[in-house]
Amino acid sequence: MAQRMTRRGPLTRQEIVRQALVVAETEGMEKLSLHKIAAAVGVRTMSLYNHVDDKADVLDAMADVILQGMTVPDADELPWEDGLRALARSFRAAALEYPRSASLVLTRRLNAPAAMPVVEVALRFLNRAGLEGAEAVHVLRAFIAFLVGTLSREVGMAPTYAGAIPGVTAMREDELVDSGLPAVAAAAGELAVIDHEAEMEFGLELLLDTVRRRAVASS
Image 1 (tube, rainbow, N blue to C red):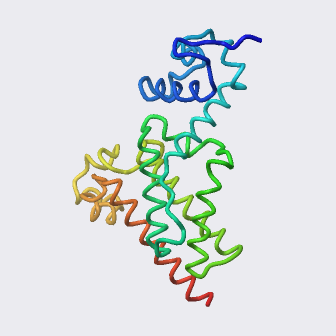
Image 2: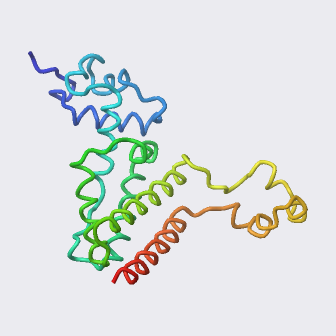
Image 3: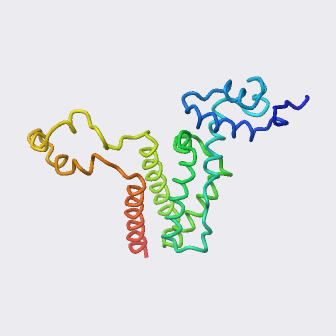
């Protein structure tokens, strides 16, 4: 079979995925379609099927590309706390390189070649902290859940409770108290704004402190 060609040369899976990211970042994930990807690479839609199975396959591959943008620290070069901080910050930075596609790394299946090096390094840092086996895996999953939840909030997939809260922010402090929401009234100023990076750093330090305590308890 003759090699399908694009305006830039032979069509490849990598080119399809790269252009899919361009389309998603330009027009939004909700507008992404195989038809638009095909137009971006300069072929008919059916030509894509020589390289990808379907749209779901493209979305999974896009997620892998985003994850591959992580800078994975050397597990032997940093103290374990700094290593886990570096992994968390790198995950956030890689995802936010593609802000309109970032949801993919939170919701799609990630291929082992992209994800396993990150898992390997994270487990080695946890091992150096003093956590082994099932306990290290439990902590790793807690870290992943935290990072996914934090980034979901940052990219608009989860509520932040910042800004206008219908039926609440329009109320005066005394009205909130009278409505049985004294804690909300006391924290109204802080609830109204959010610094996503600061929130991630705060939660990250909470988790690291928990790891230290678990490590001491396990020793």
